[in-house]
Amino acid sequence: MEKTLVILKPDAVKRKLVGEIVSRFEKKNMDIVRMKMCVLERSIVEEHYSHVKHLPFYSDMVTYMISGPVVLMVLEGEGVIRMVRSMMGKTSVYDSLPGTIRGDYGFHEFENLIHASDSPENAEIEIKRFFA
Image 1 (cartoon, rainbow, N blue to C red):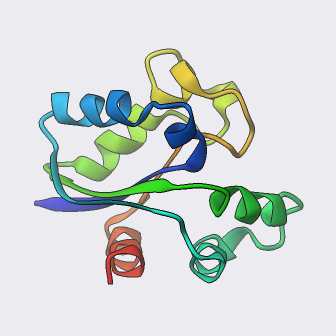
Image 2: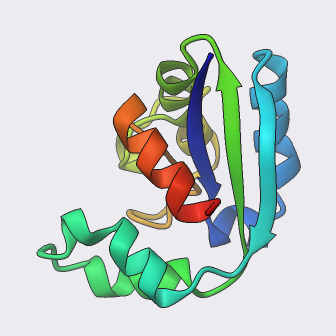
């Protein structure tokens, strides 16, 4: 069974969308094998987003990701990475179709509600990062 890391970002928690988003995954028969709520440390967020450190919004994104609690989940299921990424919508909420999480609830460029691993390799790294 494939696993993926999902982060419900501070805006999803603040806007009380956690239950709605989790419900979408459960309705697709994905199993939640780990789950916790916490406020992320700056160092772990900087490591997680180091691949976009060169972009102008990096500093604001790090500040946003440590601004409040997040929900971290490990989901498991057949094809779970592809399915979750399809359900999320595109990175930009402005390009996300209705019916996706970002398309239905998003309204900000990088405060886009959710993160999920994009490959089995990254899922393994990210799960270890957040669930040591």
